[in-house]
Length: 260
Image 1 (spheres, rainbow, N blue to C red):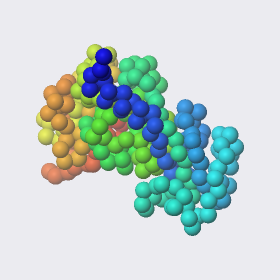
Image 2 (cartoon, rainbow, N blue to C red):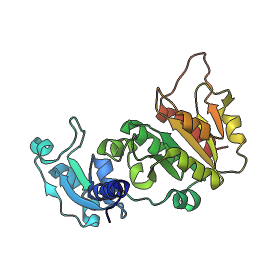
Image 3 (cartoon, rainbow, N blue to C red):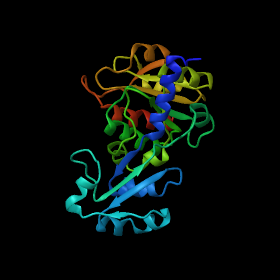
């Protein structure tokens, strides 16, 4: 019996995901990945200077590094142009954090998560992961498509947070939001045009866990995402005109939610 097309597509996607690898770069990103036992590490390429700086972590990881002359480093490793690699690059498999329910109910940290609606800039997502770690969130959740994947640029901006802060990718964001609501989460969507300010929107949660939902700069939250939120809230500004990029808005909202 011939398999349905959707089954074939799903199997292909699974095989592709299993074959996917990522090149992390930069001293901090490589150091943190080397020290993460959950990270599957494949190939380490370093300059002599970077090897000296990472000597402790390399020895603990058990990896055998490839030493490359800094003058030909860019040709030895397939990194994006202009990558600030500092003579260190590590090929790895993406991290597997598990299911949304497992992480968001029993995961480490506060009962607080961040949900990203088609935020595609890896620098913004990296900064959000860093803020989520600082303020003790349980997870950052984004879509599998139309969102920033794990990349070297994201890891470098996250400054190590990618190795410690769960970054979950889901097929459908509104379905994941509904799942969180069924777990007891209060869903707060950030929207500049909302009438309710962030503080009272968070206060309305009472003792319930909170999910902060943020959209991409410009488009903001999609219509279905907005409709799935329990409340839309804005960050108040001191002047008539004001705006924050999505990573700064996430940091402000995380602080407010973590200290409510």
